[in-house]
Image 1 (cartoon, rainbow, N blue to C red):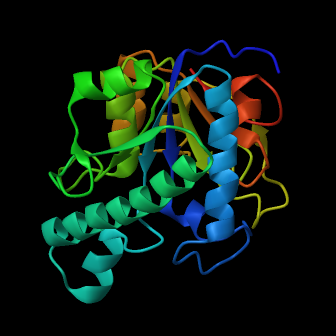
Image 2 (cartoon, helix red, strand yellow):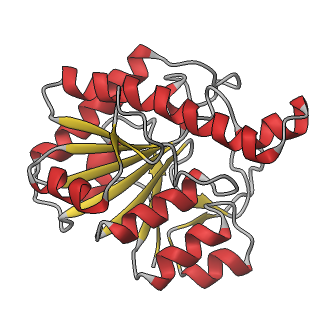
Length: 243
């Protein structure tokens, strides 16, 4: 494999990605051991290339904050904190899978949970990555009213990452949902402003703005493709770039 052009990257991984090997699975709840193993192997491949890796993990396969507000009459702040705790559960599962592949890994949480994770400190996270440890970043930004997409853009900025990657169900950005519209157009390259103006559902506006202000390119790819993470870092396969 060729050496990637990126030294340090931040991968945004949705909770739903951990739920099933099948990208068309509409349930997307719980944690699939098979999917965990596939993602851990992909991370191991990228780690073996000498790339420093941070991962922001979502929690939608367990609990989604917005869902709690709309369906369970839970106030927004409480619901968002519940969602943050769901990301900690996913972080524990992902950490275990990564370690099982022989890749050194640490969990850092934006919410202090000392029994199971280090509290997030920017310089400590950088030091872990410099020492070759994958850092799984749990509990979002630690604040309600902010998505894990925004947390990913924030951490990528804080940690001086060369690239922000968003792993999704599809292999890039389309004008419409390609699963629902046969005339959906694949968009290979876009600017941050185009994403906002066209209302493309890639990341929320706050996340896109953070990436733009800190000059961090964003690549969107499918996590369901085997070795998708490694391929996109080597400019291979199908993906979209925002820069």
